[in-house]
Image 1 (tube, rainbow over the protein chains, first blue to last red):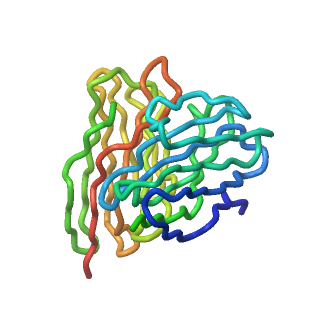
Image 2 (cartoon, helix red, strand yellow; image 1 turned 90 degrees about the vertical axis):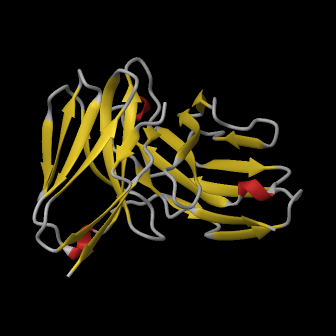
Image 3 (spheres, rainbow over the protein chains, first blue to last red; image 1 turned 90 degrees about the horizontal axis):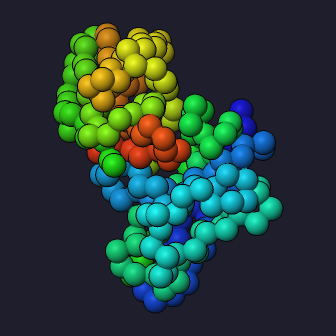
Length: 116
Length: 110
């Protein structure tokens, strides 16, 4: 079964450093999501793409976070500078269909970020 | 925007039943249900698209009451493999983004 690929699996960085996460969705999935999950909480939507366009980034802290999906396939999420409060699991998900309303989300294994 | 789930945690013995509730303060277009095991990614269980719709997945089923803006997940004759944290996700009417609930931690013991 096709999977959503994410890398790196784990990342430890010092505060004020830059960090980037990569996601490759399931082939053919037009909708791509980045979620942040703090331990013990539900995933929090950061940004949603439809092809290469941003559909929703209202929850993205734009002073330090940026996301892109230049060719409408894989995506990169960047944090600069990282803060201690950014320590969390960063999950990428993809879905088929128009903006994923009626389609299940398929999640990658995530990137566990620790900021020291 | 985040739906609220109850209970926060539940412990069951194998074979027992459980109900997990999800409610929203906004009108809903659809509700998703996912299960996440410790250290793993959330896994899709089902989507409910219409008010009053019920869907089933093995011994796990769910209902969606559009008027009450609520959904419930029913787990019958629980198995050890059902352990994990269950999240509902809601898409509001007129919106396209999925917001996850607070989660319900389910533990099934022998």
